[in-house]
Length: 358
Image (cartoon, rainbow, N blue to C red; front, side, top):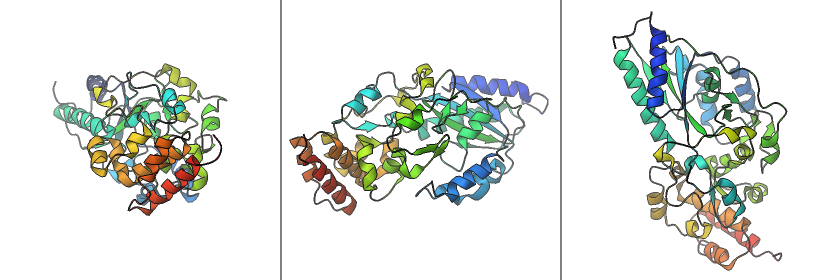
């Protein structure tokens, strides 16, 4: 194929979509950099402190809503989605009902999605560079100040649901997003129009900690994904019981979404569950040494927790589990852990386990 010029970018855009599918993406869209409408919403959310300890949300100023300020020369964003729900993992509802098991958000069961998507996007960008007259670009996968859901909506990949997750009408919401910022003036796709959520508020009602304070407004400080992944230090005591057996993230708002009846399973082998983490025993996980934790979470998004927060989260789940001598014995093994955070959560969990009610 000859190098593309300014007169045949439409042809290049068609090839980009084809190449994206070949690389394992279910859909690729293209949009411009116009995110002005997002700035006041983001500013209000940050001003309300709803980002909690996620200081990186405010660290980059307007670069998040102005792609060309983050990567000079950017005029288009190529955005892609890839399904991640495993076809072979234990059904999530089953794990949540068996409270002696630990629930891990389905996106984190396999290989770290950052690695998988970044590699595929890089391959896509390099293929574009082989045929384009010029192609300055940068690849992102949840790794920089990028408003990926707004960009994906603008590229026609779906709409932002009331739980703040992107939904595609034919594929639900169990997918990852990634972006290529480019200086190529490619033709753009029409944005997704409308709000198919309608009057449904199932995601708002089901949230265990009432973190969705209004449609499309999430108070991260109450969100179980934030509490178990982003938050350092102790988890506020009033929020521990609602966490249940969720030890890494939470999928409740997606599990009840009616649009996920159309969700498609992942075709990517890297997203298959590893080390039995789709339905793991809490007692067994709590016994992992730091070395075991690092070994069993190699190339996994879970590793970013570190062993201390891993134990903190599992201690809460054990405290919420049915009374059982094995759970109590497991907790006692960590009563003198070097971390004050772990010790405090273990004591809380033991009090719960030793309560008088059956």
